Image 1 (tube, rainbow, N blue to C red):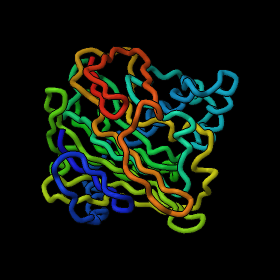
Image 2 (image 1 turned 120 degrees about the vertical axis):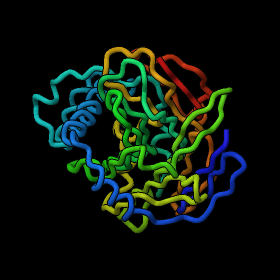
Image 3 (image 1 turned 90 degrees about the horizontal axis):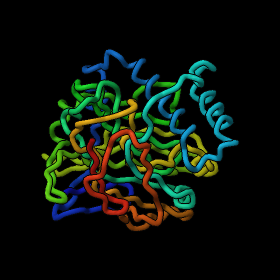
Length: 316
């Protein structure tokens, strides 16, 4: 496998022979692409996204049965969803993916960052006729999801949802076909995958002020491009709360009861870095099995390979 991911505020995470280049601010260009290529079903897509999160809370293995409805209700209120929406059943869940152990999820003080290569084919194939995500968070409760979204067999989209701004829809929402420089192919376990290198960071930039950032690795220029940034008021207690948000690493998030015939999806070189109470970033490290566990909701996906727990590919 080859590839490079560089977080501009943390030490470089290098995977493979390439050297990281300069960081380039491309936020205006990405905001413009979101305006130029709108999703016609943006409200329906956001509703499906939020309903799926409620479903994942209800089925989260670390949420006690007695607490689930309380957690679901609190989350629905925060997201301004009505009572009926809370009771609507949602199929699917987690086709396969990585969740952080509770201790590791909360083990940062002034910043956390996740870097990984999303395995993202140009179509999911198989019987996909609803939404299907390859998504992740960086442990922070108010962090972002920067992910690839599939809907049936239509062209996939790259989206950013900021949990510090839950009342608004996607901050970025761009067809993958418009992001050619950020797509490349890598080899792993004898197969060739199309991937997108994504880093998302949540960091305290001043006392009580946190920043969410998303960067994409530009394979054509050798630069790490800053595509999204947002500053907001928060506390460390909010960012590291014993909350469902932030608990999932890279996962294949599903919306159907069963899948068959899909093309491989997953994540490669899943790495994290932690910033301590003094503002010092530690080294990047591949996500180990002892800080995480695998969740699968048995909707038809099976494992092609798993390097615990920093590389995985699944298909149905």
